[in-house]
Image (cartoon, rainbow, N blue to C red; front, side, top):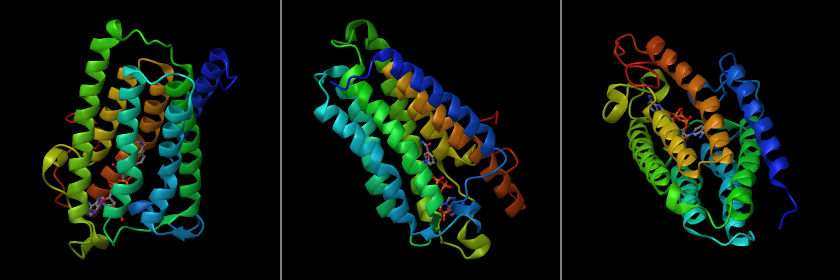
Length: 257
Ligand code: NDP
């Protein structure tokens, strides 16, 4: 037992969601300085691979620890949600960084540290919920259809995200123009500048729906806060950098945005 009561946990998460709202607004004015938006003045640089591993590891470890050490028995609810979370984070912490192209840009330590902070808090929230605080036994019979919908969305989002990241990986450094960047084609790039972000958002929407509780929606709020402003920035950059950029392509949501 952690001694954390549900009321305090909920209040903390509402504050955490409020902070995501503040970050969302700030990121429309100051783009996170990594990848193509890297610029000086944000501290020393770390290799991209090391940066990604350090950033994402806390979420993987804390949710793994929550499930393994928490007093709540693992059931279908926490087992399925835990598996979704851990599979995503094994990819993001280990597979994605190791497969990054050599040409991937270094990232400032300040970005790595802020992402470590985010992943510590988010990992602790999800781990506490799944390992301690979620109702037990969970009402799986009535929640079955909702979980099925959530898992379906999660899988579709993950496939879109993985496919889009793979297309970008093959593209990186393939051509010398525009600093090694070029116009991606294939998959949902036909409609979007950032289908990897679109897939990621669909994925965590599915996770939140399947969970049906505040921790999942808090993670979704942070995903939106990080990725919506960044997709707009990427889209503007593509249009400014490549004169023939497809006019019909949207930033993040097919046909809309
Ligand atoms: P980007 O799309 O900016 O970059 C992904 C990789 O592809 C980088 O190695 C990048 O190189 C390369 N790349 C991108 N566009 C091109 C191009 N046009 N030509 C050649 N190479 C290109 O994604 P992020 O780095 O921001 O994110 C990586 C993953 O992490 C994504 O799947 C994203 O969804 C996820 N993520 C999730 C967040 C969340 O809050 N849940 C937050 C941030 C990311 P370089 O780095 O050198 O630019």
